[in-house]
Each structure stands twice: as C-alpha cells, then as structure tokens.
Image (spheres, rainbow, N blue to C red):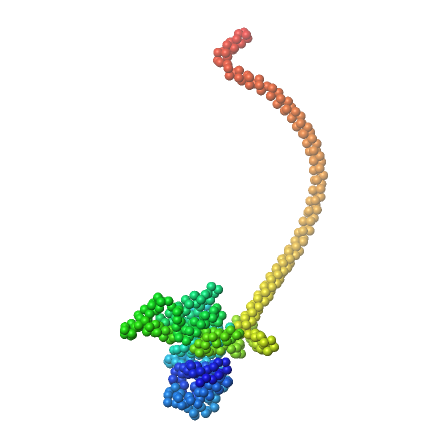
Length: 528
C-alpha cells in the first residue's frame, strides 16, 4: 500500500518508522488522543498530510491495538472537545526523554508539558556543549529550535535505521540542532574535513575509520554530512550502500578484514561457542554493530535540480532516513533572536522594540519580494535566517562604529573646550598680574628714563676716551713696527755671529790645561 503525502511517496517501511517513533514507551499512549498528539509531533502538518495518514490508520488502528497497552482506546475521550487537534494545541507539543520534570522521577520518553523547564534544560545542554567544545555555538533557544532538536533526538533513539535527512537551506539551524541533539543523547559526532586536497581515497579512509569505530566500540556515533561537503557523487553512492546494508563491499582490504574479525573474536569469545566463531559470522556481527551504533545524518538544501536528481539516484537517502524539514523561522524565533542580539546594546526598550519590528519587516518583505521575483522572472532568491542575523549584526556593528566616532569627536571637543578654558584662566591670571604690576612698571619706567639719560651722558665721555685710545693705538702700532725692524737687524747680526761663536766653542774643546797655563804665564810676563 502506497499513498502520497505532498512531496514523497510513503510506503509500509515509512509507516513502520512512524509507529516506532511514536511508540518509544508503551505507557505514553493511553488513548487515541495521545496517539494524535504524538503523531503531530513528528512534523506532520495538520493539512493533507495528517488527513491522508489518518484515513489509513484510523480504520484499523483501534482493531489492531485494542488488546494491547500501546493503544487503550477511549471513545469517551475521543469525543470530548479537548481532543480536537488544532494549531494552537500542537504549537507547543514536545515529546522526549531528556527532561526530568519531577525531582524524584527518572527520565522517560513522554510528553513534556513544562515548557520553561524544557527551555532551561536545552540551555543547560548548550552550556555543557560550549564548555566541552572548541567551537562554541552562539544559539538562542526558541520553540522552533527545540522542535527540531527533539525530532533529531527521537531519531537518534531508534535502534535500527536511526538516520535522518535534514532538508532546508543553509542557515536554518540544521547543524546546530544536530550537534546539540547528539550531545544530549551522548552520541559522538563524526564529520569529514573537506578541503581542496580532499580526494576519493581520503573519503574511503574516513569511512573506514567511521565504520570501525561504530562496529568495534560500544558507544554510538553519528556521521553528519552536509551537501556542501559532497565533492563527488561517489560519496552518495557509498552512503546509499551503507544505509541499505550497513556495510560497503570492497572498502576494507583483506588484512583489515582479518584485523576486524580478530577484534570481533575477542569480543564474542566468552559469549559464543568457539565453533560458531567463523569469519563470516564474526563479520556479520561487525555489520550488525554498525547498524546498531551508527547514525547517519545528511543535510540537504532543496535548491536546484541537483537535489532531486541525487534523491532519485540514491533512494536509500529517502527510504532509510527520517525526514525533518527546516522551514522559515516563525515570528517568535525572529523576536527572540533579535532581542538576544540587541540585549547588550545600550538603547531604550522602546527603540529596541521598534528596531526588532523594523528588521522583522525587512526580513518578511524580502521573502515576499523573492516570491514576487520568482513569479515574474522564474528565478528563485532564498532569504535565509542567516541574512536576518547578519543584518542585525550589521546594525550592531554600525551603531557601535558610529557611537565610537561620535564619542571620539565629542572627546576632542571636550579636550578643546578644556584647553580653551585653561587658556582663558591663564590669560585672566596674567591680566591680574599685569594690573598688580602696573605701578611698579610706571616706577621702573621713570627709573629707566633717568638711567637712559645717564647712559647718554656717559656715552659722550666714552666717545672722547675712545678717540684717545684710537690715537694711542696708532702710536703703539708705529712703535711696534720700529721694534720689529730693530729685531730683524739684531737677528741678522746674530746669524752672522753664530758661526764665529761655534768656531770659538770648537777651539775651546781642543785646549788642554798646559796650553791654558802657558798662556796665563805669558800674559803675566807681558803685564809685568
């Protein structure tokens, strides 16, 4: 039996997954009304989708489950007005096992009625994630995000085929919801690091690491893949095979398979008879553990023909995954996010409210203009929440820049005014000092005038003395010239006498005492 539900063809496999997601806990569903509430929480809108599935289920649901505890149908409850489904009833409808509403009770999968506690719990998980992770998520927790977190969390709880297909344009919260849901479920998240050098061999090595960690460890692991990371359609072909069978033939080399088998043997040695531990049996256990521990979460954007072609070529992405649509943010999300980003901005509440309304109008009008543009030009323009956030950040940055600019100019003006005030004070002080010094200046002026007269009189006398000095200077110069002539003549005579002197000195050096005594005796004789 197949039936259409707007975008996709639903079959028994999808119906089975819906029932599995609804009936985590047998005690949750006690009436058809509880079933409807759980059913609506699966992101199935109250339009043709709900009506189509209700026709299929309603006729046989009560007959199939009337003897079980899963669905204890109460016709009395179903006829009450309170059980009428509406948008207001399902707007704040959440199911999950991550909130402990009572202090003494254990966490169990059930409807979460205390929305404040739900929001607080999600924020606590977000704080834990930011403390443990190097890359922090700056998120605002609102109902739209909580809905998708609870859906991804529920998908991760499935023991088999717990895979998800997240459909939405970039910036709608696919990555944030996935990472936070995995953290809440204590599931390790595995992502590939795609770069220009990322090749097919690198992809194969990453898959080997992923499958071995899922098959050889006891903990669960989630493989999160974005459509922007798919460099080759071979990636999707491998993913399609893993979704279908849990294994990828020819991925592991023979020595790697032997290593896997030995690891499985050590794990099952005490649990199974050694005769049953054949290589085929052990490798099948490895594949079973992959199916049980591995969750594949693929995020696709519905933009373009490439999305449709990939889903047609690789049907396991649809058949083996639960679909979660990430649509436009509601007004409540736009309000909360804008108020959160403007929380630290120093503006009045009235201005803040008007700013939020203004940006909401910008965002909503942009969406309408994009629709109008498509109707006229048949070309789509997608207005994503990231653009809304960036516009608010731009407003904050621009406001901060302008405020800093104004503050800088104001400080300059203030400094200038202070300098002018200081200069005025100094001028007044100098003026006061000048006023006080006025009599002294008058007295000093008279003394100066008298001193000038004395100096003028003495200057005349100095001129006379100067003239005498000039005359004496001329006579002295004349005497100096005459002395120089005499000096020159004496030096000339001296030059002539010096040779004679030298000869006399030489002659003295040749004399001996006998010559001196003879000459003295002769002299005495002559004198006598």
